[in-house]
Image (cartoon, rainbow, N blue to C red; front, side, top):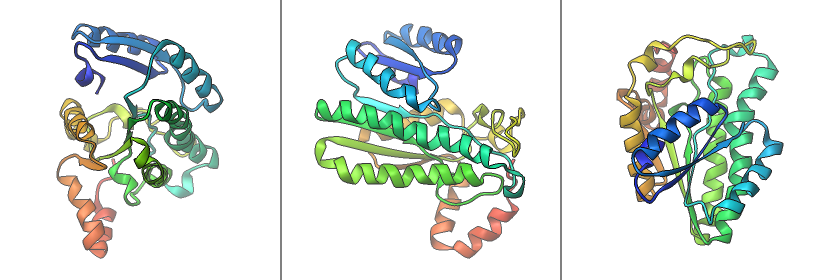
Length: 244
């Protein structure tokens, strides 16, 4: 998404934990004419997020678009998953995301508007095997930002919810297993998923239009319709889908 946003006249603030990867994407965006600023942060360290935003406010006039894309996935059965693992998933997917948003939202309100894009998941619309807390945390985002949209629509705040399906990213490699260890292997389903650049283009088109809810993916998106209109059939199919 950063590469898609990169164009002359655009300033991109790139936030994340890996300084080398951030520097790499910054160089790529700058080669397209954008200006970049790297902000090292770990969204799970919620106590540090306010100070990070305050530093940004000293250097930049406003934030037009906030993209909440931090995420930690899961590959473990409920009976095998420790409470600490459940908490770690929520710290990244939910608590860190809403805390960063809270401070950016205050800034946006001072400037009379802004867009908040939230990357939830198709799994946030319903439960799915081996993803109990991942699904729950992504579902929680829908509830939180749905409320934010209702509370601040008249303040010029635009909320764009995005629910991707199977996208070819390495998120399964860093997914947590029940004991908190990482899976370290690529899911078969994700390996055959939508190309990440195609996904980024679709998301940005939707955000630019201010669309509230967007689904991105391939044939797996039919599960959303089945869940809504044929819940019994959905449950039969979901139990048979390869969760990896």
